[in-house]
View 1 (tube, rainbow, N blue to C red):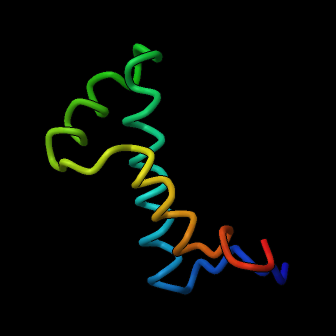
View 2 (tube, rainbow, N blue to C red):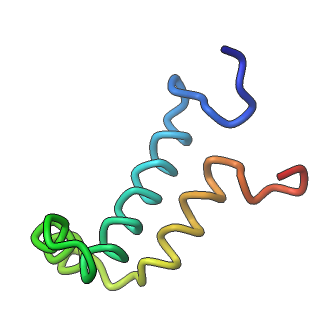
Length: 68
């Protein structure tokens, strides 16, 4: 598979994926009972809002580029 956005050998891609995943867990933590504990842990580790983490992650992955 030769995907433009999925680059599992790229450290930048993994950093973006981690930021995206953490932001999504924090954002969903208030609504989904199973994610409440991880969301509390992650939100206590940073002062960055979940929307900023998701945007940062998407930017690093490349989904917010001029072509996407």
